[in-house]
Image (tube, rainbow, N blue to C red):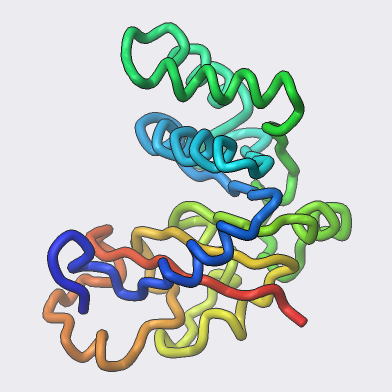
Length: 211
């Protein structure tokens, strides 16, 4: 296990993710919750935009869970940030300028509220995602979709299950017994009996584009 700030990361592919991100012309965000989490997502998106990459943010067409981000949530959050007397207004300025220029796009697709696993993405969405330099997948429910909501052996390689159409990183706080890509040595050192489900453990997992 890691120590200090990252002490409860079960897997940490940050180095691979940053390397991929530096080369990405377009970054796709598959969003999770609105509220404070969305503000953090928008701050990351603004940083990506400032480094010269385009950003496409995938929201849900309607909430599955009450906190799910929709396009109206994105619009309202950006508008609110722009009205604040703080550094957050600078984030909103970057986002609004990028949206006017077409380098930031907000989109949704019915697939994100379907019961289908990630490997059953419809062809139009696969085509769109395949143009990404990096796909950032946020949250527990989206992670479970990546793994088909199946109970894999936790040590099963993440990248052999997911096989994305473009390089992908999953950012997840674990709240369900669906997981892969965790080293057995890490599991053996965990003393928390509820580590899979109590929301105290996280993963940063990278998968290269499937060949």
